[in-house]
View 1 (cartoon, rainbow, N blue to C red):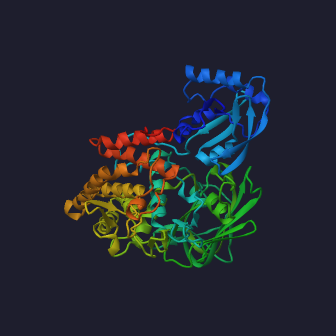
View 2: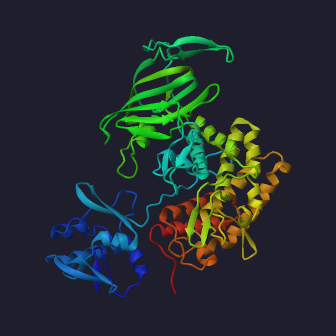
View 3: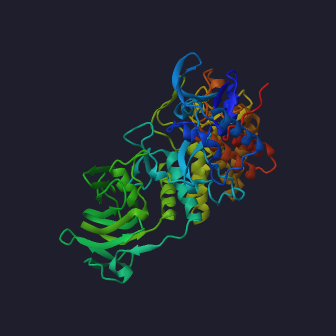
Length: 579
């Protein structure tokens, strides 16, 4: 017998036993190899209160473990792994202890040491995904799935938020950065959803006439004849500094008209972060994207524009991205850790608005939707300007379209139309349905599986890739247009037809993505005769969350909820039965 803490198994046990015994590996030696630690494992407190209490069989196994190890010293042991290589283990009586760092990599599981009630505890999990069961049926004017939990602008692959455009610039597939429509649509959907779930914003006005206080600013107040209102004017001979000394509000909102080269700057202090210094962020009239010199960050707002233009800048994001803070070791910059010390303006121009805000979700939602209006092609698509290579057989040349991009853009545009009544957003959503009627080989996003089932491609490769999560997102966009368009002749009926055909295909092909222990990301192994492409846990949990939402959209289709339940069990180590 080969034994592990909290359980034993024959050396000929199948891989299935390992997964099902995941919970029994808790407290595997990773850092502590002392005998006293292992002798008390059976008596340690269990995981947090969310876990179920140990049953009688678990208690018997723990008792047997203590008897097997009692009075034995730990000795070194070489463990041969499938006669391919060996690792250093420990042995105590009948027990063999395998380092968790090996188990973590070998079985792709996760664990962490912590302390509970003064005792060391090892928390084991089979996956790192998080489920978000919908609290109510899906609505085209409601939250978009669980996107209220997203903070797109802080993702590692976001280079910065563009000054002129107000949307993310991605480094995915191109380090220099480009506008990726999926990321921009998710940015908009996230802020739309957060606008529904978070408290209304509060503001701190920085123009003296707005807050009724003397801030030390020396703006000249002039009458704008076109607006018929007073605005704050500044000039090269009259730069303005505004003492602020405020925390908790990280959004800077300025409505600016430029007459000569202008700069708006903010002095920031971050408490208890790895930055350990003050930061000045300069917003300059330039086509520069973002740069830094020492503790100074420079963000370009564009070289010129006409009239007044609203800029919404997250000071924490600009500081983090400008100073190169990315990855797990990046400082955790939040509004609570930020203190705005002072602001200043120089050059020449006029300000209609200058304020700090706790949030600006509505404005950021509209900025994303407006980007979609400006960049939609005559064919109704938003193209991706970089090459995408899935493998040597599946390569997309620059300027390809994506069904996922079309779908998430439609979901954003229809929501903004519902909120504003502006038909430009609805018209753009209608045009976005056109690529669904065009084959991938001809520049569209449609493919057919076995000449029978239509599929809308996130990556419209030839041969088809058939990515699951992108297909479901495209269905949600078609559904939103179908349920939003008040004029069936204007596109609602066609969107409904495309959606219904897609749901039929999903019902037929969904079992092909089930591996019995997880899910597949796509079907390249079927269409391209290569190795299967297993979904990472973050994609697997996306599949489950999407099916849970689809189950509320199609309450008569029980397949979606039953499949979601089964796939959710895979996240806890459950597997389909074997023969």
